[in-house]
Image (tube, rainbow, N blue to C red):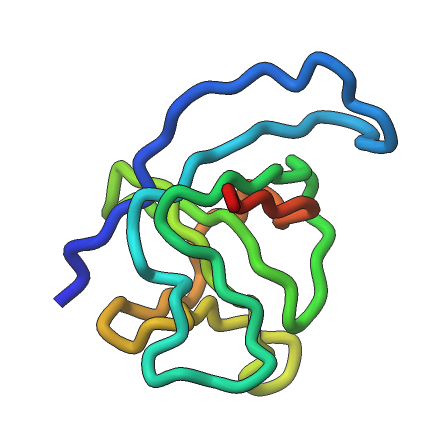
Length: 116
């Protein structure tokens, strides 16, 4: 059952520094990228975290990407994983959420912030 959504809030990046091109920020409100079952060394993105997405089509296996789907009016974070020749699957770290195959990739996570 995939009830988690990546709801968004809008943020302004007032000093983009080394961020080139277009980028946007998202506040994570679901647990889809919290490792379940726990995985040692797997970087988790937790509810309340903020991620910066580079709005570019370039990513590689292992990158966390923001995707959307024609079937859903939501943005999801998923890890890009190769399955077969030149075919990506987009998998959550939390196995309670769904994988995706050929959805639209908005960009890849380039920065991740967590409140201490």
